[in-house]
Image 1: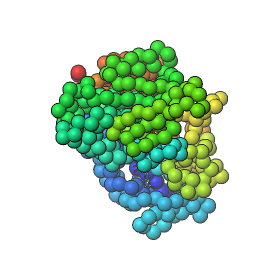
Image 2: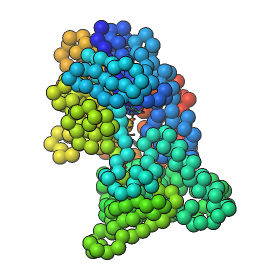
Image 3: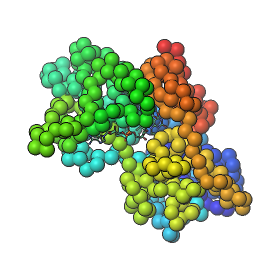
Image 4: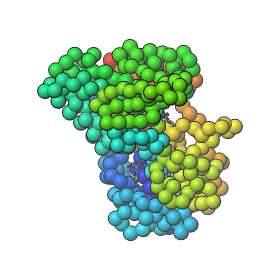
Length: 406
Ligand code: FAD
Ligand code: NAD
């Protein structure tokens, strides 16, 4: 029997296992390795960071979707993969050997080497980090009662991509709770988003981007655009405005909560395994394998897939991670059964919807723009669909978003 090792139980890894269990039950041995015993919906981390949903709403035990007759689950940290020897090093277990390996270890926060970012800003890429942000903000608000330092009420988001904008919306929803803790009015909690670009949300046309930013600004969120962050000091963001003279002093924005969302790179394990990579992402072959290593698949945020005729890889999303997992399971099934492999992987995006808090959203799906209530419902349906795809009906009914009427 072939040994298939899947590394990472996020969207890409866990979906691959779920599909392999269906397609090749009893025909292969699957080993799944993940840091934690739970899967988490990365797409909802900002809601945990804002304290709007508890962490257990966005997580479920991996064992709930594992068939123990086919799949062995190992909770451990992957240290590296040796693609030539076809082995995987783990922190606390013996090395694994494989016939096929699926590398799906996700992403880490990208600081671009900006001075002080690692030390003085809070990243938001795991459940623990999201919980730390929530705790940090609550501490700031609660301590405002005894020491009324206005910096405690200032929340600064570094990077206004999708993650930064969705986080800003979630924090705006949380303002009344923060105000109760601090003994102030909700509008005294200041949320700012600092971004280098002139026009945020470049993936949307002018009209839709303006609509989205208008929602954000009407919530009293301050957007500071054309502001290239150069340094993070304890409780201060230093940035340079586009067009400012080289010797002009940097602008300074003070706040006791600084959250880092300037982008992500693929898992560092990719580079540590000697694979050719750019920011932790491997340019995938037409069958989603690593160059020169056709038995090592790359999936999700560690993989780069170029659209036909395109110049930049598709953005990394949960949607493409799930689609890659489906393809990889089909490819492994064909190879295991000695059949012809499927045609080269192709991605068809269903669209993109960004939320701004629990009841507001905007985006494009099926070629149509969605706004207001319909976009918010669509966003929740997309999230429910991902949950159903990985967790099945059990997790869907337990953890799905059914608060559609608001
Ligand atoms: P992940 O889902 O990150 O899973 C990686 C897994 O590997 C995790 O379980 C992790 O614990 C594990 N792991 C990591 N390192 C190790 C190690 N060394 N050893 C063992 N295990 C390890 N995309 C969308 O399509 N729609 C959205 O609405 C959306 N919203 C988002 C909101 C936020 C706040 C963020 C941060 C991202 C969002 N994205 C969204 C992007 C999306 O979440 C990612 O593209 C997606 O999670 C990638 O899936 P993945 O399986 O590659 O990685
Ligand atoms: P991103 O790369 O999309 O955005 C990062 C932002 O940070 C950019 O606007 C950039 O201009 C800004 N930035 C970078 N360096 C800066 C600096 N030094 N100073 C000031 N600004 C700086 O990253 P993200 O928002 O974390 O998203 C990561 C991935 O996850 C993307 O592929 C995104 O599409 C996906 N995502 C999707 C959704 C959704 O579909 N609703 C939500 C969140 C994230």
